[in-house]
Image 1 (cartoon, rainbow, N blue to C red):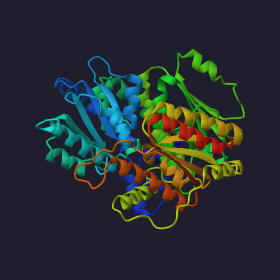
Image 2 (cartoon, rainbow, N blue to C red):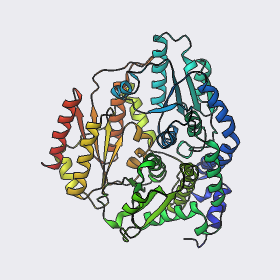
Image 3 (cartoon, helix red, strand yellow):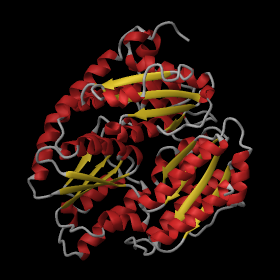
Image 4 (tube, one colour):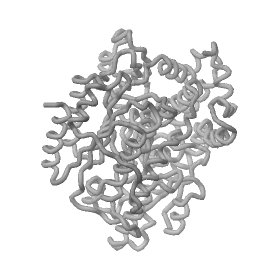
Length: 522
């Protein structure tokens, strides 16, 4: 480990792609993804125009925004919506990142659409969930008698993408082009989050000042004075010492920030059979030797800090981050991007690609095209899954991967099950919602440690929704995404089990309880 941050920080700011492994072609791709280093300046330069733009949009009579995007295209915006909410005359913001027909109906089925602004967000402009939901929304607006459905739509995407072309063809209200040299999960300080933030009415100027100040601090030579290098070095040191589980203990007010961190960390480090597994604030179950901890909260939340005293567990290394104000998020977005880039360099992996995400996309497309999947994918029964957990190697974890509507009763059962697994088997557990996780922790599941154990839980929709100009509806899309990911994990030698639920909500809850009891042997 180098004694000072100078070489690492200087080389990163100089966009030296040899910080990370790979041949010339790989390093050329990395150089094309380092635009996030300029994102604080981008925000400074664009915050006033974004604020005026949003004011003009709000003046058109919209009363709410539905943002349709996956992973890095929506997670940072969700952080802003959850933490700030609409401010002043800002619009409320709902994220739709689920292809389950019942979830779509829950989000939009009982609303009047006439005053909804639909924002479709995708860097590539080819994200299948966004494409399908965009087609469905436009079709439904037409059916509701809207002469120009595009007048209720905005796209956020890279210049020249298929979504940008669609925005022109369908006369969208606007197409906000994002810098093309910024990868999705590193794009929190660009249009993907800041355009929705402006619609919310948040103070972009204060956010830009926070981000700029942090970027300045991340140029410091000394480790102790450089918050990005010190955090990134610490993350890498913990992983290299065998601490592959990072527990995120986050103040409830900033809880949504944990979802953004989860993607940034898992998708950036989960490859080449390496990876840092983000865990929530629940009992982590993993032994102290596998754990490191980040504690982040509002500086004035005395109750939170009392729950996480500095002397809580000296056997678990920890980082403590106190937020003076919510606008400090601008700085935290940048600090964590810088830290993960540094950690990737030390861990000798490329934090800017997601090579295993494409495998599930390909499998999903083959299923939708009716081509099927090669090879067998025999899943463990619930009882066999219990035996697998009982004999799990020390480096294991269980990921519960759900393809469900947002029914609190179902997720309460799953959280109880997760805690029972932690207590009974001493195995860390995460509950990841699909297809959202495919753009987040899915990279870690497929490209990281081979010791992951996976339980798919899906429900058969009570009603399907057709997708305009497609031979399949949302039920088949959602099922194919689950089946495709399950097949890829099985092909890679992971232990995989599945539970399918059929019928009304209360019946599904009862079925789920019974199946999970079989896993636990109760």
